[in-house]
Length: 148
Length: 409
Image (cartoon, chains in turn orange, green):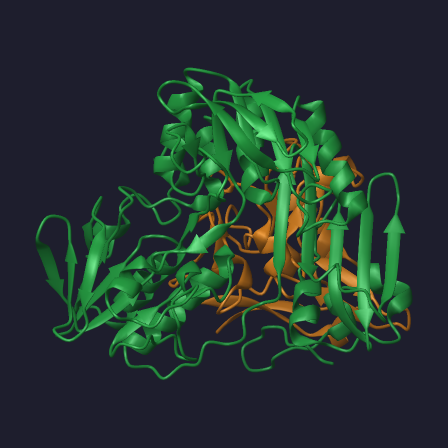
């Protein structure tokens, strides 16, 4: 079971992780940051870096919790904790867009897509063999994948 | 080897079955349900709106019982529990012995004592798939529907039927729609989107009588102001009552709901209860949690059921999303903060430095922490100026052991 570990002390707020996340999940078929539409809500990042205004940063990434509030409250079966991989997976076809998960995640991670028909949540870049794009994009190694 | 029997295949029953199987790979688990198929009550409107079929609203996966080696006795209603001989009776003379039993019978819709309403064959609930099937059939004969109650269930039914071209009238005793979840403004937004879809609301008014045809079917509802509303059928969405008949018939302590202790044990030995039938809460996540806690206790783990969440719900109708947590009506001595833009409406109720209610209409992304702040009574004093922009960063902490987050307060 893997988890992205966070060392907030190392984060300098460059948001390369957010850009990498957006790029990794873009649906328009394009590649490369130069063509990524940063203003399109459909491209929103699944992670967030929040500044405390005093030079400190709080990276908020889905924890794929051991006891995930989101999956525990999902009434459609769309969100599931995979006991083998440890990931909380999301099946948008099963999702009924009730947003109980949005209400229940105590860390405020899941977002609602602009169409209000599904949620946006970290999928650990399941489509990439090399693993989460955010981790590879971090120049400070403030985030790294570790076994738990 | 122990024999576990679960009565009910809803949120509590299925989550209990799943947990029991994890703890007891080799024991015999039997689920007896009136329902033929597992289904999510919260998705019934998807079925009624013909967006999904019965398998599409199965929240556990269509092979749940096979995959977990659980015996499912479907379409059978338990008539009695012999708590001395530890046996449940169902169907025509069938019985199943148990070592541990879970009652997860849920709740049923309630029909107020309005003349003709309790007897009329064209008055339906909207709780179970069987209700949706009946409504579907009725809809084939006539498109004028009268819905009693504008809570989530009533609006779910209304949205599904609007989607199919019904002529919908909704009566609500309270002066606004979704009275438990909304304030006046939020209610007006929802009222407008439903009216745009062709629904008619009759607010602050109730049904007081009915006109019936020769077969007892209601053809007109008479409102308390004397107005007659013609209709082809009626959907009752004026609240639910815990299903406790089995308990009453079996000498298990119950009044309005089945009584449970802090381990979700009933008054009978080795008989537990979880979900709506306990009256502890009426929402999906709590039923799931109760099912899990009861199951762990049944498996021998000593676990106390934690305090239920405060009142909470989300709604999503015609793309208008809302999150409503805690009490919006308890405003005495409280500070009420409001944020309103053309696209968003948010309201926070703060008492003694603690959030007691929170409403968000519009984009509700990333707002889960408000439920946690209310539930845990976390101090937010000094944060009033950014109450609508709070994020986990304001309480940021990391559990060094496993890399998960932890609230720092």
